[in-house]
Length: 572
Image (cartoon, rainbow, N blue to C red; front, side, top):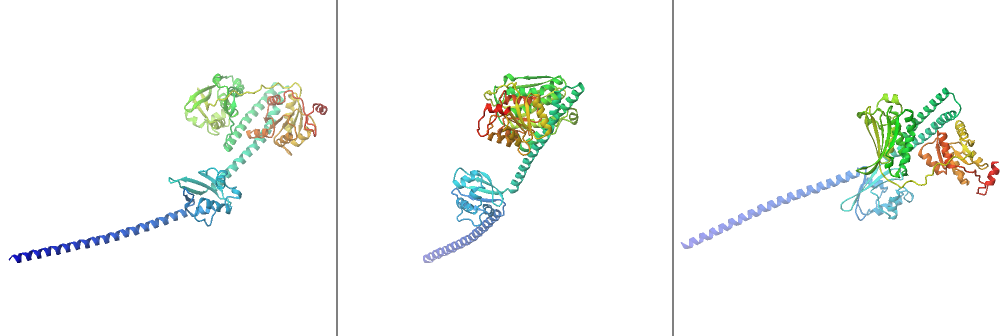
């Protein structure tokens, strides 16, 4: 009995162990199956990722190679890590060096002549950096390839110190810019030519009228003459406005900041507008001049031009009452500023029309244009000048009450100008003046003008004849037109100075009235500049400034010196 019980226990234990082993094997088999499934899934995912990566890599490469821009990634050590086909094309390299570095690529480009002889197609700072290792490369620059393509090269830094460099073909943009610049130059040249032709004719009209004014006239003749002169002066203002505006829009407003006397500048503008105010019976006043600094840095001539426009408009649009010019220094958020205001009691401007005031060829309405005339350019020109001086031009107005036009400029004080001599009195002795002028009408006007001032003019038709006369005769002063046949005034002045006539004052007497013309005349060795049409007062003032009481001088042939006795013999 005991034996049977023991056997049963053994058999039960064996059965339990067997079932445990079977259960364990099943678990192992299940785990292995799951492992195989996981391995298969991982392999599938891995294969999918590799496929997607290869696809994305191909897509990126395809995209880069089809871009119109060249792209390159440059490591901090100079290695070129990535580039596309367009970058190779714009670099002018068919077979890139290996491994590609900025140094090896630049050397290949130099061998291929990509930068022109000695790097002449590169900007100066880029050439110094690439060829001499000087300075730093700019963030962006343009260069022209030997085939005429114009590239813009930009370098943008990455956080790790690498550079992404892009190469963009801007040939069409550059061509359009060059054509625009050429058109602007052609326009400026055309304006200069038109200015010369128009001023030449007006000089004949106004000049002859001013000469007639000096003769004995009956009342009717004087009234007719005043009409001619008034219309001529008005025509000159219109032409000046059109030419100034055209020049400003084509090449911009050129300003030259220099120390000046602000009071003198304001008084000068004031005096220009005063005669018309007096004629209309208007009060005309200036205030606040005592508050201004002794010296101011600005372009006094351009600022005066803007103020003359404002004062002229104020007088034109005011029938009763008066005009006041008020100057003051005030504090603004940007710092001290000079504020110049022109107040009038004129017709005023409706609020809805103020925005049109500073537009080109614009007035409030056509009735004003018909009533008062004008081109509608004066305020546009003034605004261009003030903005070129970093200032602001504004207006406050009430219809039927009046207007206030104001200019506000950054205040830059300067020491009071020194050395400004008072105009010298004209010499009691008549001066012998050589004039080179090719237009017969203008010859008549300048000859009569100089004789009216008590001088002795000698008229020739071009620069060559002027040089011949001055080498054989003595003259106290020379006046040269800029545009003449055979030899113009600029070349004649340069030749005159080169021959040793350095003591003879030379004045440009020209219908070329632009600032660039004035600068060209001074650069050629001239001492003064009178723009046509001119007045007797302008000529008298310039002669008094340059040759007050001068003795005539003449250069002795071959000696390079001046001899007073020889001069007297020659003059005799």
